Length: 596
Image (cartoon, rainbow, N blue to C red; front, side, top):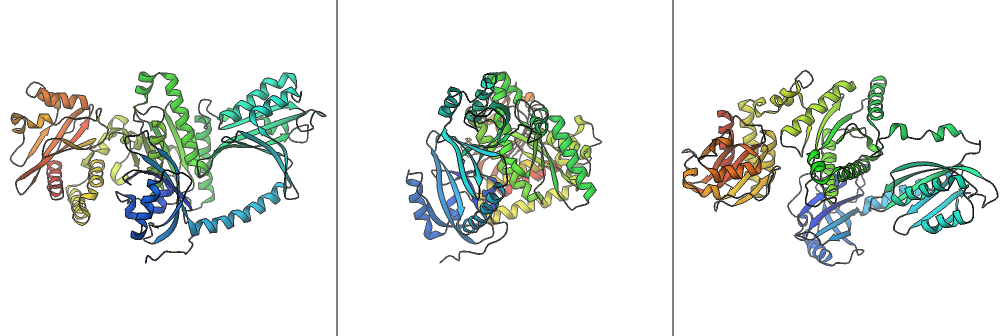
């Protein structure tokens, strides 16, 4: 019988979500999922379940009913099992493989959280007794708008109707001053369209049912709860001299980017600067993480699909960024496809890594909904306060430099500034920053240590960690992409963002091309254009995939041919492989041959 932990810990994660396919493979998870389970995920979700519960869970997945939950024991990152209630949020049958979106609820943590929420609700209701403003909510699923206030701890409802009927009735009864009818329709449109943040003033007799005209300020925000339910919530303030009209009418428009609703460049820069200055003045041991985020290849989005589509992508990206950052930091737009965030609620690099893993995965999935045929990715550069600097300019330059590194290394990744690895990015010319990201920053002995660590990992865990090991070596050795061809010369694995995904290994069946490999099974091509005349088939493959240089090594075990691994760079970044690097990669491939 599994020992199920029932102990409560302050940072227990109550809810998390993930997406799996019909083979139980984990496609993606949100930040809370990685925090609950850990970053070292197995290939199959079933491996996290207690053995006796796997059949129950499989039957649950096969059942197409959405609302029916199941309770199973799940291994969390602490190495213990917890009782988890699992619900299906939705099932996507449009993909090649069925995808199921799951929500996990820790039963013990949920119970404790419910008690906290219950106590907080009583407390906030007491506070709301003293609030002179009225509240409004709009539920998208039910199309209901509700206006209410609290009196003696009880909710008193003023209005409750569908938004369309409420809008028509208020105008029909003459509750809106004629000059403000268009403004009232704009208010309803903002609510109906789920505008992120809005503030609108209307001269109306709505609250007095036609007896007295008031100037009402409607301030609202579109929010999403943990289950994905979308709603608009806000306050209605009666002006009429009883409140400071100026303070309310000065909205956020001057500080907001008009296309996204995020803070504009000036506002987010000022806010980040002020937060850093405040941390310096208070001398508190606070960690801050500055991120510069860029949508990869965004120019090609505009060129291919038009600027209107590009504007929609920017707006959707900004909304997802706002929801993900939430109250744990601030976010703003500082350029066409470039954004800046300051994370204020994280204490360690590991916590930030979990956040970044989740946000990149989530953004890729959400942006793919705009056009499933296009792969949307982002690159991110990060610097840390106070470890990397204690002023805005320093932290910005380091984060911007790391963004440049992420772009140079093939995009679709995040780089956290590490002085020992990335060097002095502040005093380096931008064009020379790629010198800092070359694998040459590692000493030969460091590379040997890296290979020894990867060897231990492969020997202990076998082929199941091969993909992770290949991605690790790609990042650490400044490689843009990796292709693995099996013994039949078919492309078995692709890592990195090649321009094409269907890569033909036919050129490897050419005996003359194979003669390029030396007696150790190594073939180095510094410039793929140099082989265009002698090997047109190979050059066509390289050109279509945007490969400009490649290091190819045969997978050999006891003299038996098992395939070829290609380590590639893209575009104009021709790699001058050093003898040390070639030897390092050769040893790495020899290790892989034992498990491939």
